[in-house]
Length: 321
Image (cartoon, rainbow, N blue to C red; front, side, top):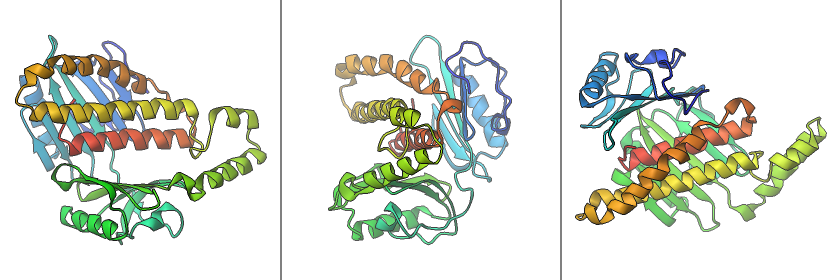
């Protein structure tokens, strides 16, 4: 994993080989097992040429193509996101590639938070997190129309408190009367992301602590576990704090940019815009430098969950960084 460096070579890992290699050194490279993020200098002509090369490789499924933004899947489910940031003196191309989310047969759980919502009855998908306090998964073979119907099914199941639809109904967030939280996002490529958090007073925290205690008595170091883990399903406190802070910042950024983009007087918002832009690099750099090789499995799962959720929010709000 790399990130935050200056003048790095173009990556050569398995994911990076799925996209065209630009004749550029990179201002930053950040690689995980499921994604690669690349930043390199480039103007509008460079951006347009790179997009054209991606299209030649088959990245045309569910394509979104704008002057400074490009998103698409290929036939295998790899997703590319590219954007041009040219508000500074040095235009830069931001490139992200994600491995397919659907990884095999999907068996819907019969216990835990997943039982709070309807079984979508789909054959393929991948479960990211399954515990007594949280469930998250990617569900395949779901069209946009089926996604809209599934939202209605979840509303009928009681998730209609403090609800919010995102742009073009590509996402839905709500609670039920007991305080359980639901988030649904349509990812494109006939894929839905679903996440359910059990209410804190549902007893899930106690179950998580019990599981942690059993794990410690099976041979884990109790001193390490007690200092780095809490009732967050085993997620280290420092990792959770960093990711929660990142998501909170990005939620604020998205809210501001939606208001900024729809404003008739953007000049009046220039100072706030500059503040958000100045804070963004340090916030992202902190996340980029998190070393997954030193994380627990729970840490990595939470890292992927939060960064994936933020990416989905940005996509649903049609905001390009």
